[in-house]
Length: 145
Image (cartoon, rainbow, N blue to C red; front, side, top):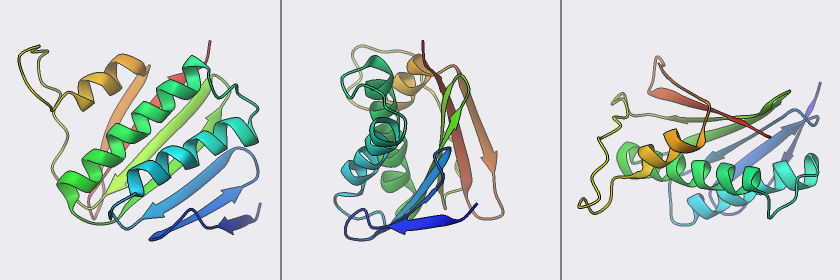
């Protein structure tokens, strides 16, 4: 299956391979989080017909925002976003160049910030982290009801 390349904004490149997969690369600069969230929304709404106001789309938007934010904030460089439609929902994978594994902290309503991974874990049905020769890949599975 061939991939078509589409632009997603400054500092980004993206490809669609049929309807099941789409990927984008971001430079980590300003705007890449919003671009990644928009890319995920287009994948779900335009390619798969989901209602943009659905819980599923909202969950994926938030997960993408949190994972790309972490990649930009802690890896200080480019990151890649892969979206794959699976029978039960979607898998969201974010690669970054940092070898530091994400750490979910215990819930603390008094803590300001650093709740992103807590949010991701609350919204997903599966979460894995794999070290790569350069960096790591975080994959989240979101099921659609």
